Amino acid sequence: MEVTSANVWVGKNRFERRTLPLPEPPEQGLLLEVTANGICGTDVHLVGQDPTAAMILGHEIVGRIVAFGPGHPHTDAEDQPLREGDTVALFPWVPCLTCWSCRRFGPGATTCSEPFVYGVPPEAIGLTPCATDESLSLTGGFGRHLAVRPGTYLWRVPQSLSPAVASLLDPLAVAVRCVDLARTAPGAWDEVLTPDATAVVLGAGAIGLLTSLALRQVGVGTVVVSGSRPGRLEVARELGIDRVMDIGELGVDERRRAVHDMTGGRGADLVIDATNSPAALSEALAMVRRLGTVIEVGNIVPTGSSITVDPARDICQRSVRLLGVSFNPPRSYTEGMALLARNGSIPFERLITRSFSFDDIGSALEALGGDAVKVTLTV
Ligand SMILES: [Zn+2]
Ligand SMILES: [Zn+2]
Image (tube, rainbow, N blue to C red):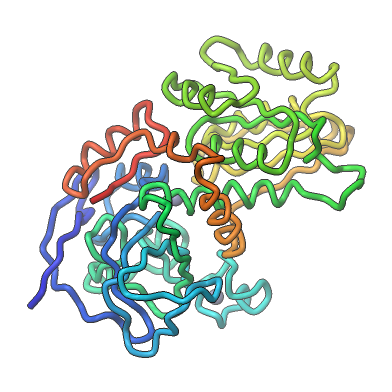
């Protein structure tokens, strides 16, 4: 019997490397050798807890096709042909296709109420936990192989991209979705993606920096990023962000004043909160101009703390457009892959600040708690 190995999450901050049987590729699915897996803030958050059942985490997955299961169409989400040995990135949600959300919003919606999700414990996202046996069947990117289920959307990775850079596709799709949500009809009164616009991104983690790069691509005039960890701010400067604000040096009022000073006292056209701090939403609302847009993307995991919003002063009186993001459809992955394929003109590799081997999962998680922007497991 052929075998593989995986880092199985067995307890709070505890992994075990286990040898597992290498299955046949599932019918209409395929078998991947995982060549890169990005570690997400969500993983760090989860690992700090006890799992309901031991499982393999990791949802920012890139791998090499080892074998197709019978009936796989041999094409990717863009109808490009796929062959054994090709490298692909995948959409971690497999929708059920039959629930109300799937019928209403389409099969690509991450709103499905009964999806299968690679590398994320179902109960963490309000779904029913799997039985232990099933949760150990190669379903996450912290393992050396992945059994890809039927109906999983895949994108072929061009040979010019390293697997590590390709594993940015999942967080980049979030960034792309934020920019897409900020779009309006050209000339609309609430248009904010213009060459004279100032956009502020709160947070200099992977989502914040990828969002800044995506804003650049659509021609926003001035991009400002704020953050606290020196290594991340250094990367922001190297990426050519117009202004980098260190929140250790500038207090919240000073940051607001700095943005007002940059914009003739009006405030930012667009503020995107990519931090996981509830207070940052208050800062965003105070920083945005009249008829401006605020997008909340960072506070995805409840912290139990709340903020005070004055609906009149903060939203109504200034006609602020406030949008939340947790839904990034396959289309955002296609757009993201197009941006990654332009690698060279956009310095994505600067975001991969640390790579670790699959055997060194502990160090990888530690690095993400520090100064690194994006930590990736690679072969
Ligand atoms: Zn993620
Ligand atoms: Zn569904």
